[in-house]
Length: 281
Image (tube, rainbow, N blue to C red; front, top):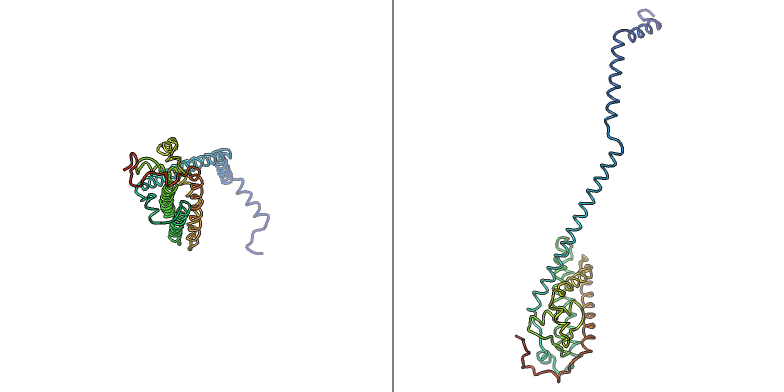
């Protein structure tokens, strides 16, 4: 074909380009690029170094998680202490009816019948508290849940504290001392779920020491886990809270009454109602 270059001439011209000075420069440039590529590969971190970096990140993450767990533990303990302190502060202010007042309000009843009345009233009170907190948690708000649990525990503790104190009155076993001392002793009975042995000074004095706060924290912690279902949304928690609080109050009352029956003092053997006790105010 006219104007075209034969195949052999094109091939010879290509070989001239690769063998001349320009071809040598191209080959040198390619060699330099290869050297740069090799150098770049040599400067890349080894696989072992990457493993060390990942291990370091994992260790840092574990340290952060550990610090968070320790902070969470301290926060939980502080929360339990705050609830226990609130219960201790409220106890002396809770009105407790003495035996004379109870007999006047429930005339014609013996000790067991009067105790049954007190337990029924307290069970109704704690069930109302549980239902109220469960209704407040109808639409769950996670930041408000700890406050709702604390409010329920403090409210239930007030009702059950009053019940325990009045059961001691019914069975003729009022705790010795002034109002505040009796309140602390009854708090110890609530925390231990037992009655007070007024004939043994050790049981009363133990309630007055630092052991009481530890026992209260344990009781508050137990009640907290027990009351978690009360926060179930859509009014389910209200029903659950009412049933569980009523059951727990009756169970506590039965334990205390069983303990007090073994040391019960007859009403006829008690001092006159108008006679103040030593140290009472």
